[in-house]
Amino acid sequence: MYLLGLRALGHQVFYIEDTGECVYDPVQNTRSTDPVYGTRHIQQSLEPFGLGDHWAFVNYDGTYHGRSAADVKRFCADADLYINLSGGAWFWRDEYARIPRSVFIDSDPAFTQLAIAKAEPWYVEFFQRFSHLFTFGSNIGTPASPVPVGDFVWHKTWQPITLAEWRPDRPPADRFTSVMTWQIESFTDVGGNKDQEFVNYIDLPSRTAQPFELAINGPQTLLREHGWTTVDAMGVSRTLWDYRAFIHRSRAEFGVAKHTYVSSRCGWFSDRTECYLASGRPALVQDTGWTAHLPHGEGLLAFSSPEEALDGIDRINGNYAAHARRAADIAAEHFEASRVLTPLLDTASG
Image (cartoon, rainbow, N blue to C red):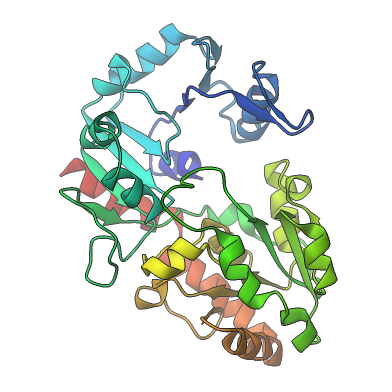
């Protein structure tokens, strides 16, 4: 959606993935030295939007796939802005460094800043080279969150949403849903994962008639024993369209946050939740401090305890049509791509 949103504003766009890591292949369920799964996924994702020849993937061994290294250098030579989304590249190649302005967008607030605070010099220097730093953590660098930022300035931003791609083509089903990973493999030494928070809500299905379905990478047997319907997360997110269809089948989102987001009050707000709202699906999500920055109470509801979660379920079901309309309005008012990207570009140009 960054690519589509920027293009709609009149910019030429090019996608580069350059992490230095092997690609995870879900078919083989392993990290593979052969990048064919990842490169096919990029191609199939971008081709329908007329961007099938606007990408390059740099494999762990330095080989280029999609466009060539020479093509990447030519594009970078004329580029005005380099946007690194959540570590999509972990190198400062000469062609990236020559671009006049550079932006890093942090989608893991608190984790990122805590990692920088204890990191080796090379990691700190990596972030120092950007012109501007942005984060999905709306409280980062403010008195509302104790997360240390040192000498770095983090500007608030949201995930841009291209609303036209999220108009639902089907009525909702009866289930509150979410797509989630129980534990992440990164940042293990600086923060807590979703499992630490979810255990506080694991008995929720026994306290309401509302059915739930979790698309989860995690302990499905345990969750089913507590009344949650579960499906494999990879199965519903294999393609952009599978992911969107899962959200469109949902009645609403029920979202629990990672423990570090909650305990740090960093103000993280999920790009997944934005997609529910843009689809006209209400969202009931755990408060990480985002309530100081976004409207809530209708269409988008916050909770900090099982009792508040149960109350939110009843409120959504008590006037579902009104909550669904308000969800779509919030997406348009706060997350529509031009509303998000224009101030980001203005800041990056300063």
